Image (cartoon, rainbow, N blue to C red; front, side, top):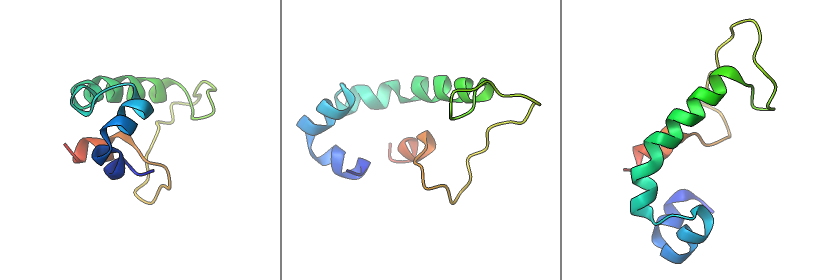
Length: 73
């Protein structure tokens, strides 16, 4: 289910996230900070990064990323 659809179904949104949409929006910047901090030290597979290469989110990535969610608020 896409995020835009979750927003329309309050009960499902709470079931999927554990938060009301209002609380989720309030907490999103903190989730983003923790996400970015984690990815600065670890790869997506959980292994520690080596060689100083930074995490990069490509525009054509099939995976959603937090900045998309922040766009909707």
